[in-house]
Image 1 (spheres, helix red, strand yellow):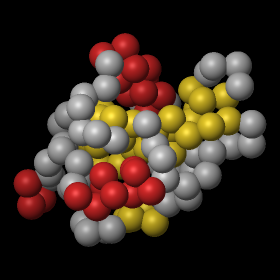
Image 2 (tube, rainbow, N blue to C red):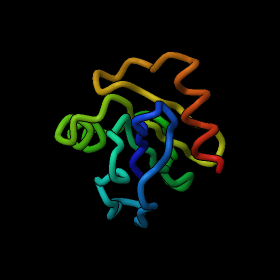
Image 3 (cartoon, rainbow, N blue to C red):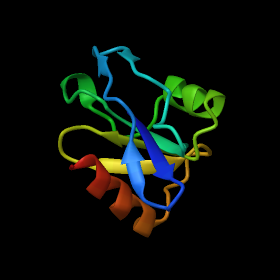
Image 4 (cartoon, rainbow, N blue to C red):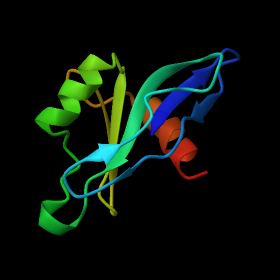
Length: 101
């Protein structure tokens, strides 16, 4: 799902996508009047469940010009900027709170 920032600074999300162990179909749209600040998806625990972004994750993040990419594996959630460096802790906390809504 896309993570979006409204014009008043609040965070929201786009539609939730559905996927398989190897791919996901999701809308790359944010609600009207907001802008993309990142995306969130899971990596299945089966087969390793890495919270590191895959090469495909990074390619899509760069293609969609997403500043952040958040990944969960059922136990942990990690957020990265498109260069693979962990995002600031305050931003991660706000993004994780948004995801739990």
